[in-house]
Image (cartoon, rainbow, N blue to C red; front, side, top):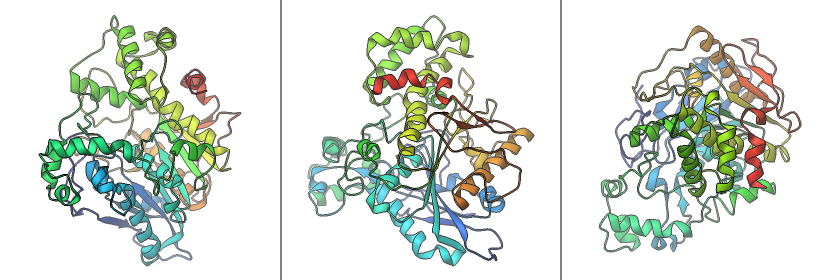
Length: 472
C-alpha cells in the first residue's frame, strides 16, 4: 500500500517511526473497510490520531487490518501538521484575523468534518464515530473533548497514554510568541512580518529548529498545544474540572512502565547509565528536573525527595533506571493521565472504562539500552496494530499468549466503538467482563497475556495517593 508524503518534520527525532517522503503537501487521509460492507446497518467508525510528541509521526506507521477485519469497523487515519508547522505562535501572525496557534488540531478537525460528510460512502456510520489516539494522539483526543469546535464530530473517545488534561498546564498563544520570534531569528529572518515569515522555506525552518535539547530528542524551540481562545477557549485543566467539555463515553488507560521508554531515550542521548550507588542522587535530580520542567504538572518540594527514594527501593526493580522511570512515570503519567483524569471525567460522564497494559515481555522495537523496557510507553500499539513496526521498520511477532491478548484487546476496542462498552458488540473471543470505573473501587482492566482481569486498588500499584497529595 502506498501512502502520501508525511508532514514536514526532522528525521529521526524519535526512534521508532518510519518515513515516507516529507512534504508540506501532506494532509492525506486513509480509509480502511472490511472487504464486504454488505450489512443491515452502517458500520461504526474509528478515527485514529497518531502520536509522536506533536512534532513527529504519521498515519502510515499503523496497520489497522486486525481492527477492521476482526472488529468489522471502518478505520480512518490521517496526517496533520506537526512541529512548528502545526503548533506555532508569533506576534505578527497572531495579529492577523484568523484562528492561530493550534494548526495541527485544526487539521484534525478538518479530517473529522470530512468523515461526517463522506464516511457513509464507505459503509460507515457518521453518527457513531470514535476518536482514539496514543501519546500525543491522546493529547489531541483530550483537546477535541474540550474543544467546542469539535462538538458533534465524534461520539466516543479513547485516550491511550496521553498527557493529562487535568494536571499539565497548556500555555497561551501569547506566551509562545517569544519562542516564535527566536525561531525566526535562528532562521536568519530579518523581516519578521507575516510576508517575511512566509517567505522562509520549510527546510530553513526545520534547520533552525533541529538542535535536540539533550534529553528527549525534542527540538530547540518546542511548541505544543496552547490556549488560543477558540480551539482551546480557556484553561484546559479548568474546563475539565468544571465540566465544560464534550461529554461522551470514554476509555482511558496507561502502560505499567510508561516512563521506561523515555528513560531509555535519555540514556541513548546522554550515554548515562545509572548505578546502584548513584541511584538516590539521580532519582532526586530527576524528580527535581521533571517537577521544575512541568512534566509532573506540579512542583514537588525537595523535602519530599527522601520519602520518594524510600517508596521506590531498588529491591523492587530489575535495574536502577527502571526505579527512576517508575517514580517519574507514576507521578507524571499514570497518576495524572490515568487515575486523576478518569476520576475528574467520571464526575460528569457516567460511562468511563480504565485499563493498564502490563505485558513484561512484549516484543521491543526500540534501540537496546542497559535495562529491559518492560511495559513501556507505546508497547500496547503492536497489540492493536500488528504492523506498528518500531525503529527497525519490521513488525515484531507476538507469542501465542500475546496473540490471545491482542485478539481480546481488538475486541474490547471495537466493541467500545460499536456500543460504548468494551463488553458487548462482538462475542468472539469470549471476553472477561470489564466493569466501568468507579472511584471507590479504583478498578481497572489489567491487560495481561493471555487473559485480562479486572482488579481494584489501581492507586496502590503506583503510589498514587502519595503523588496526589502534591496536587491538593
